[in-house]
Image (tube, rainbow, N blue to C red):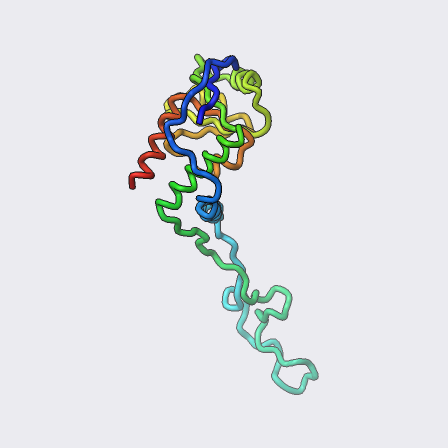
Length: 212
């Protein structure tokens, strides 16, 4: 498959061949689902906590005597039936993470990238370099590339501090290193802008995944 290679100014340079085989329809869909569910589950804090009867502060004295008052029997001020009492079967801190094996994650990554390429949502640029941090300059680049909506920027290496500082103030732009990008990031944004060197790094990841 060929992708259009563009300059940072937005003009076309030519076409670039993908050195990795894309996954055809009908394979990898379940892997993507499992990986996305596991990713989102791992990001849940799991800190919700309610008090049981034993956690409610207060005396352990019986509210009133068992018989002779005409009222219903009551044994504790912390009863779930009472306001301020304990909660029955309420949430407690827990770990929501799910285990996904390495092969499934690798397949999900390749499948996600394959679908975005087939949909025409991947733009390859020669480079994304700035002499100084400039959010305005990065927005100008995205406008020149014809990118609207949410954008995933994939760069080669996180040492480009100027690019990082330029992108961090834009709410609809995510910046990832090619070695750290995941299937969730590839799917959640409207467009993907990837540098030529980052694409080569990503293709290396795909090949390493297949050789495992």
